[in-house]
Image (cartoon, rainbow, N blue to C red; front, side):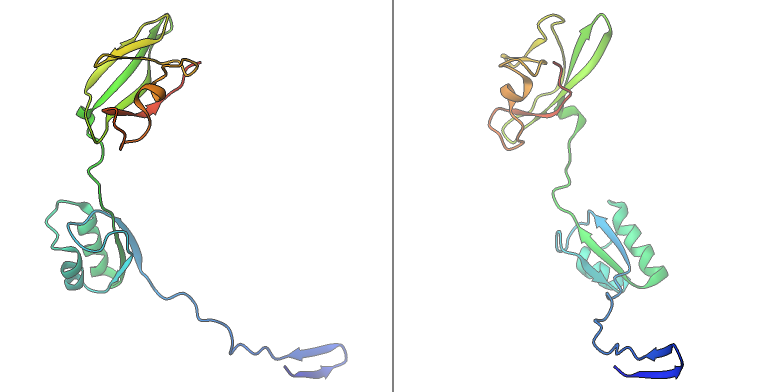
Amino acid sequence: MAEKLVSPGVFTRENDLSYIAQGVGAIGGAIVGPFKQGPAFKPTIVTSPSELEDIFGKADGTYYTELTAQNYLRETGLVTVARVGGIGGYEDDKATLIFASSSLGTKLVGVLHGSSTGAFTGSTFSDEESGSFSIDGRLASVYASSNESIDDVYGVSPLGTKGAYTYGYFKML
């Protein structure tokens, strides 16, 4: 770097910018969501509607993400798409809601969802004093301090072997 004296107390300095790394490349908007086909969980830069159709399938209105990507490409010409897989989600009719009733009213305390080996449906109420309830012959309690708490009886993994797992548990003392 060269320094040059312009006048007393004033110096100019040349900054060599030839070694600065280039900026991040353009990626356009980012759309993360379901598509019928294409690479899952891998961000893919798409530059035209025909390329989007080739990679992720033709938009038929099944998912809003297809239409969003298509319209975004019409306006800007560049979009990054990340397709998510396994989006079946949780169906409301496959869950069991667990309520506790007391003098203060009824309150939701837990949600059980069918695991990969089974499914529970409906709702149940726990006994007001003991906090216990029974589903499919398994006795459990809404109280976390119990040896038979919801987590202990049904587990917390959707891959478990207990027929259901604890999807949500609003612990009571």
